[in-house]
Length: 210
Image (tube, rainbow, N blue to C red; front, side, top):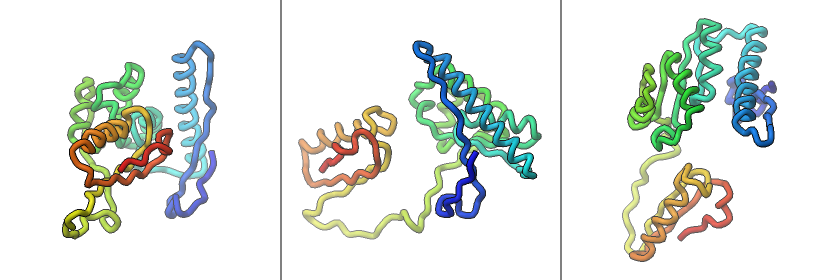
């Protein structure tokens, strides 16, 4: 466990990074995965014990996504503290969650004081797996001093500008390949547009689309 010392990241809030080993057992991927996840849970609980030993007593435990929620609810049960889990994973809405992650999500969500999906559609998708929890939708926060609607008058002949922000992966995790295919179709009908791409990943070098 190492303390994060970069003030631009912590903004004055004590933060620690916890590391654990991964396990690679050839031809036994499922066993290797569960062992690695077990080390993750054990490491998270070990870090909490170290913080507890230093005198830190939280009033609330917050976990980001269900996989971190598993050690969080265990810690909450041991310490008698309420646990809140924020969730935004698209695997729920795509119904691609495999049996193992599904069990972990059910274990974490049904033991948390609150589960905070970022939208109503996500809450409905989580519930469709038969998971019952105390839901409260909390949308993703936006700093409106940086992101806001600009007052701009359309200029004839000026291209319409679009922007994509996300990981540039060949999978549909962020949907970038779908966007590229849609723009190819659009380009057959009109060419007065321009796309700005912000993100990194395997498709980065080939992401210039206009």
